[in-house]
Image (cartoon, rainbow, N blue to C red):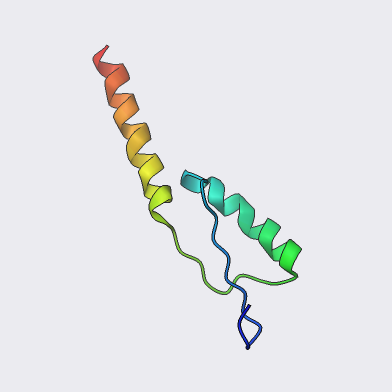
Length: 60
């Protein structure tokens, strides 16, 4: 928490859109509201992995 009362939080190990489910949980636990959010590399990494797996299945 900063001197202005700003709390920063980051999810780790949650891939894809699953991280979005935790915004409401964090808001409730902290008694706060989200002012700004951004995706991490884990969000896009999952999408790329899923697309590659789908291609592999189609070739089989």
